[in-house]
Structure formats: structure tokens, C-alpha cells
Image (tube, rainbow, N blue to C red):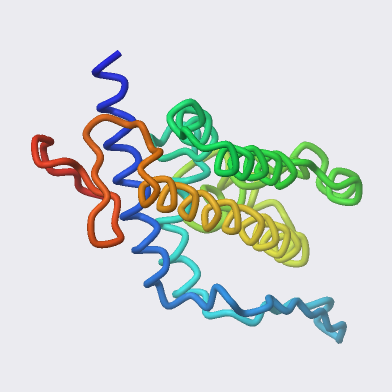
Length: 209
């Protein structure tokens, strides 16, 4: 049990440090994403009003929070924190964050109708990230290459909407962790709250985000 608690403490520290890095990314996270389509002699063209380099840099970090294979995957992190927060209101907010996370992963009927199995958020995310953006999954890359440009942009737009919903969960989870530390109701061995920051205690080995 002590090893599990220590592991959770390190994951919490890594999450808080990752949050800081995401916040410092130049991608304009407060900007409303605009999506437009035009039709001409060359067919339909779509455009999204953000810098692709900034977006890709941001997602290198963000994808850690939505990848089931990553230690910072939000679903188990939120679940494991629940019993450690000894405060009714903060646990209620944590439950709200869980509902928001689940809502973000609900497929829309038009998306499923248009994209089939890739209309479901988990599969859509994998297709967009590892087939369209980072090309690290050969199978997903092949699927992506077979899509027409308009469908690719539609998937990107859907993913950006998903990212916005998950981003709000991340902001809320960070706030819950920080407030529980300030109030002294975060019962995770090895964590301290000093100078407004959650960090590893003096007897813990350094954690690198």
C-alpha cells in the first residue's frame, strides 16, 4: 500500500508540473476555434484558425493525459485521488470532473454516421494523433492517408472540440488538487504544499515531468 501511495504522489507531482508546461505553451488556449469551408473549382477546402506548429507542440504534452498507456492518463489519476481527498465539497467537484470526462468521450450521432468507427472519440483521437499528426502508428497512418482532405479537417475540428472539453477537466482537476493541498485535506504520503505548489516531500526522490 505504501508503494501505491508513493506512486500516486509522484503522479500527482508530475501532473501538476505537466499542467504548468501546458499553460506556458504558445497555443492560444483561450481562443475560440473557427472552422470554415469554401467550395471552388478545386473542390471543397477547409481552414482552422490556429498555428499548426503551436498546436502540434501543445499536443506533444497534452496527449499524455488522454493516452491509456501513460502514467498521467486522467481517468485512473482522478479515480485514485478520490479516496485521498478528505473534503466533501472537493470530492463533489471531483465527481463533476468525472462526469465531464465521460461526457467528452460520448460520440455524436453525426460523427458516427459520417466517420463510422472513427466517429467514437477514443478511436478518432488515435487516428488523428498517431495517423494524421505524428504518424507513429502505421495502421492509423494508412487509414488517414485514404481519407479525403475535407474528412481529415472534419476529424481535426472534432478533435479540437474534444481537446477543449478535456482541457476544462484538466483545469478543474488541477484546481481541486491545489485547493485540497492548501486546506490540508489531501492524504497522499510524500506530498507537501508549500508556496502555493504541490511538490514531493523532502524524503522523496526527485520527480521529473
